[in-house]
Picture 1 (tube, rainbow, N blue to C red):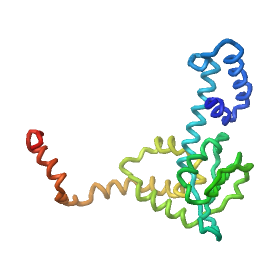
Picture 2 (picture 1 turned 180 degrees about the vertical axis):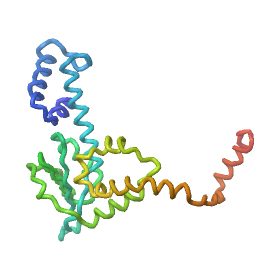
Picture 3 (picture 1 turned 60 degrees about the horizontal axis):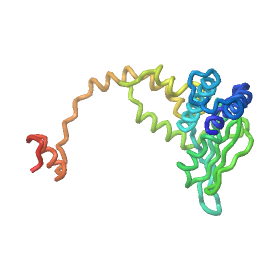
Picture 4 (picture 1 turned 120 degrees about the vertical axis):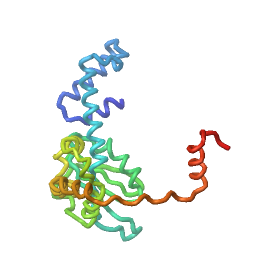
Length: 225
């Protein structure tokens, strides 16, 4: 059932017929061990669908960006909204992650397929909406850009690897994506500045009894005294 639930989130129009065929083969066709036959063409196709859906769930977990839209006047809980454009119908599969991670705030994740809503007590779903139903920029966007600038390491930049992990189709909805071209363009100068910078003096190790004991062991034969 887990395989069927995941494969059903794919958008390939063949998925319902394929799932029915697998179910028939397992229950009526005498192939009760079919799911273990990795070389079966039907199994391979369903597995590929599940892998694609799993990757998209991972991307949703990584690239959803909430925007503050208000505060509940009754209980004071902050209310956030995010917009995401998944490739597959993954909202119900991906939402428990956000419920567990952001349980202390009210939020909605809007997508063209379906929308998820958390009010601190229950997770519920409504039909999908167009892009203009989601809020535009807010102050949190600048925080995201500041954070991204602070962790951006020009010496380790690999553009192809970055685009493989964060495909360009996600960029239009990521606040930090607006500064990627700027950061990439300035990489050469930043690396040169890093190389030209004076070496910082090594700070003395803190006087902590446990660390002193470890250093003593390293300097001896390793046998505790």
